[in-house]
Length: 186
Image (cartoon, rainbow, N blue to C red; front, side, top):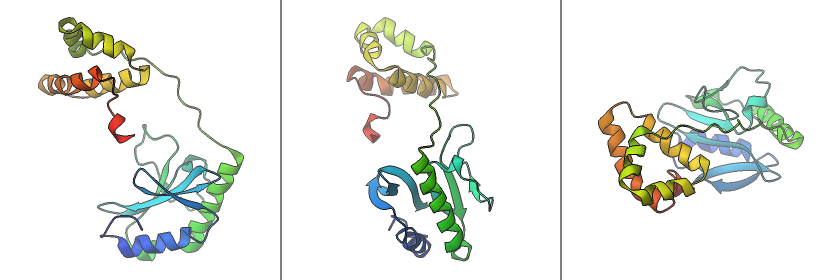
């Protein structure tokens, strides 16, 4: 059972449907994930305004009932959600169809090819910090290109200069420790 009290009855129904299928339940990222041959297939959870099933390779589903949404258009590539707002919307037959199709997708090994890595220019605010601290520059250069990109995006996404400066201040110790921005979540 997922950790959500608002939708507990609804999530129990979803769980009972998934548990009837040939999937293995595991815990990843603090939530139940159902896998087939070690590949993530489906999970579920509750949010403020809806509860949902999400399909890790949902982009390949035919979606014959037109129920799937991309939670973050332009950002999310493969994952698709099926959102519900009441228990009456849960249709075991349809859910089972979608999950079996998702299993077939895993059997076929369908995947979206990762995007080519594009380097992002170093933030001018970080460059200023490098001039004052050569150890910071050396530590940053030792980070993987992906970690460097995370830091630059984090700074550049801020709209105000004051926020950018605060972000630089926050990440300096992390860079010096060789950490990526999101390492604490991995």
